[in-house]
Amino acid sequence: MYTQGLDSLGKDCLRDEAQVGGALERRFQAHIDAEDKIEPKDWMPDAYRRTLVRQISQHAHSEIVGMLPEGNWITRAPSLLRKAILIAKVQDEGGHGAYLYSATETLGVSRDELVGQLLEGKAKYSSIFNYPTPTWADVGAIGWLVDGAAIMNQIPLCRCSYGPYARAMVRICKEESFHQRQGYDIMLRLSRGTPAQKDMAQQALNRWWWPSLMMFGPPDADSKHGVQSMRWKIKRFTNDELRQKFVDFTVPQAEFLGIRVPDPQLSWDPAAGHYRHGPIDWNEFEQVLKGNGPCNRERLEARRRAHEEGRWVRDAAVAWAAKRAGSAAPRAALTLLRRNHERRYA
Ligand code: BYC
Image 1 (cartoon, rainbow, N blue to C red):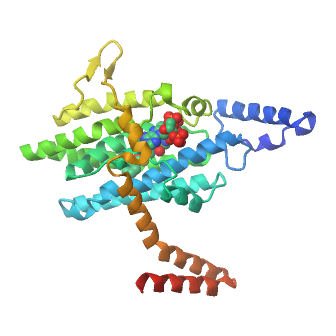
Image 2 (image 1 turned 90 degrees about the vertical axis):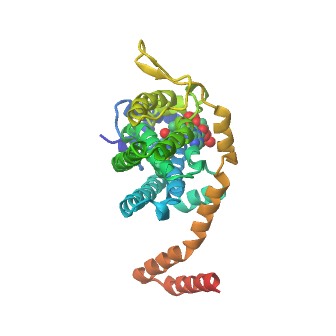
Image 3 (image 1 turned 45 degrees about the horizontal axis):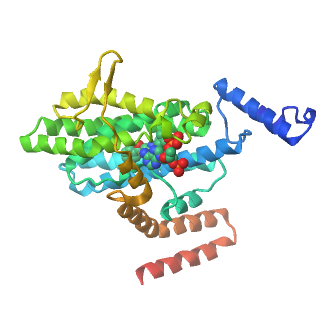
């Protein structure tokens, strides 16, 4: 059941605007509580819209920036097969970014505006993509841990209250499962290989373990949006709950690989049925969010360069669309295209 009815519910019977607003909010929350999906044309509180624009656009940016650490290895993958798999994976991430920008656009904000915010350094994207990938094992660790963490966080998003986001997440999660498997497969091969290869896998786990735990966001006590997003059923689990699920799921996988999680305090708590991990360095997380991680500047520069180099493609698409529409615009669009081309190749 959908919620179009929210716009027309007996407004005339209500005395003033505050009363109308209150009634709309109650109806809206009742639909959420009943597990109805909210669709783009439904009435929604401004804060719900803003929260979604923030989260979905940050998610879209993460997918796009997330292409860079692994893209770094496409030309150096150790075999033709590994190269083909990695190209497909990185291409999937670009597709995820595209669906998610489209889902954000249903909330009344343009993709250009969102991309502009990213390129100006005003938008957040996942902290995890500000770490380097010095060896092939880092590609394995990203697939295993980063995509593994992404699945843990994103499967519940398939039940998010906002329809377009929830539907986009279904396909994204299917693809993330393949990504996780390809990463684990790389780690398995390395950990069953020579001592040098096994050591490479261990070093990559050492580099990616703690940043992967940080991906789930600050502890619940410091999560500004957590409580409200749970009430709106945008989030279904808290940051700490998902982090715990990830640890419980991943530690046995590391044991199977025969490599060690870099946490001397990691222990099994039989009473709770959970692994307990040591303290996370939240100071490092904050530094990365402030732009001071190992690769923040490099990532933004790479995105800015790619955006500039892709300008002619966007111009050509606009010119083609105008030509097809048969409007007076094609000549202007073609002139723009020619000018940009000349500037680029001058
Ligand atoms: N990094 O109140 P909180 C992928 C920010 S891509 C940076 O708990 P919320 C992949 C947070 O935004 C996966 N910032 O927030 C791609 C907020 O700041 P603002 C990306 C973070 O939203 C390529 C502040 O901290 N996944 O899988 O309730 C290759 C307070 O946090 C981070 C998603 O985007 C972080 N790690 O919960 C491979 C999933 N954590 O906005 C793989 C969708 C927190 O107030 N997003 N912040 O300035 C979510 O599920 C939620 O937004 C979060 C945070 C759990 C991340």
